[in-house]
Image 1 (tube, rainbow, N blue to C red):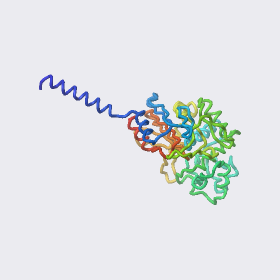
Image 2: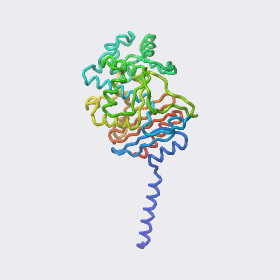
Image 3: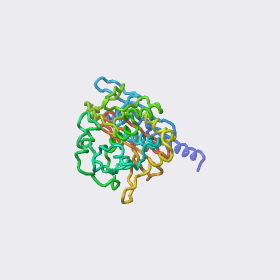
Image 4: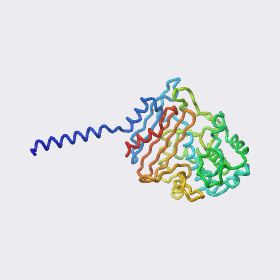
Length: 345
């Protein structure tokens, strides 16, 4: 074969590689495509190996006024709040104010009699058997923790024996919020602010509770047709927090660096609960857990009214995807995450 021919083949292979490589979309292009298709209105932060590779805001915080989003716009994060509730309980344990295997009734004697033996560990891991209020009561505006407690009093028994089954329960995390208040002597909002938000300089994160605080420059919620669908509950523990991608990233770093929770409790937080039949659930203390694919991945999602939230953390490979949207019905969360993960691999 002639040298000129070999050179031509080599150049062709290089060009082909460059073309194929250039076909791969980066994370910003993926986010932009979702936005252009009308499937995403919100903020995204993507991190790999301690380098933020996407930190963007696309769309409007208020469709009526056409006020644009920015990366400091607070979104309602719905059930992502559970990770903060679990962290608060762990902090109380580290202060010696409670034990994970304490009965919840030790702190809340007003719990119904059928719930007197459920433990804090059961509540953290959604294995308590406590009924989930969401199917019956989530449509009630300005619903409070006490309303949920009153509703639980009307039930006659647990859904199943505590520890025997995983069944996601927002009510269980409301009970945890009440335990936080009883043991700390502070409101849920005050405890999180003093022990998590302020120390981590999460300046745009706030609890929305019965005091109905003003949350400056927050995103309003909308449906797929851009009709108002805003958040109106006043419960805490199961939800109730507004935050930003940047603040959630600060929370992630604190958990990875053990600056909030000690190493032993961090391991425990990411350990699946062993059910009474010896099988494992896929939930620890406030996080879903996936140990099946090249390391440990922990995550949580949230969704209510016009809001959707995603917090995906690959602990071994040091990757993060955080996405917040205020046009919930339009966002194909799982498709979006899979598309971003392909880029990160």
